[in-house]
Image 1 (cartoon, rainbow, N blue to C red):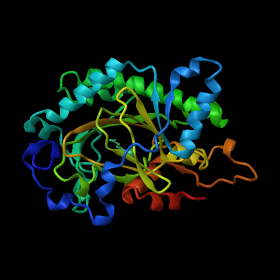
Image 2: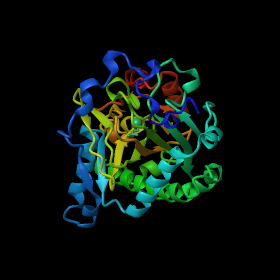
Image 3: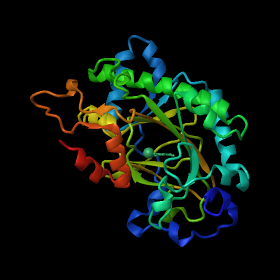
Image 4: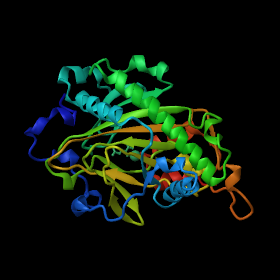
Length: 343
Ligand code: OGA
Ligand code: NI
């Protein structure tokens, strides 16, 4: 597969010209930033201790307001399941070219497919990202699982089991956010607001010239909330107060980030935050991003709980599918997207 970066092996000694970003968008020296400002790490076991429950919920709210990102540990998902899922994800990208060719598609309407760079590869300009991705819907599981790859042989089993656990974790976090922010506890379970989930298995092979390219360029997630399973290799950076900060990879943790819809529903109180992925020259990195999203026809607007005389609605009302199409058409440009959904 000549387009897939995971098929190039270690033979590429220099970046092809269409992977070299313009100087102002390159990570350059920002590649080596240390974990100076840490994304908050929140221990969910503390919720069981009634002395610490309130404080823990407040930590989630504060992290969502300040960073739009936090990591959760002791989250209840089996660590061994996480490990096996990571293993099977890596295997997928190590499959032979012939098999990967069968999974590969540039048709954006195909729900389960392997692609490279961006989902819109076929219509993209000539600047590509250093990553391959396999995407498929994963909720409700029985509606989709039979369409998933049959190889690696454990893919359906582990990615399926992990999806179920991650969806439960996402619902739990959304309930905690509701509780902490003063929304009805089941707010996100109604109106299809968290009715769908898509997983993107991202593979960023070791890269010969990481300072010149990106695995994912600067963006915010268009959905409600994202739960990321990472391994030991760092690569994710978050734009915080105008500076890129590196997210420390904690393999037993899940990274949680606020999507556009959560920012809009909370009337701007919780922030979705721009992030990107840098590559490195020694290790491949594989992640699974679980995107919890509203159903296409769900109606999105700032919740009444966030609106009063002093806080008028900052955003319009719309159907989720209209937001999504606009996001894709504008290539996820945060400023342009935000601007056009302002009230
Ligand atoms: C994404 C994303 C981060 C990562 O897929 O939207 O931000 O580390 N991924 O793979
Ligand atoms: Ni993202």
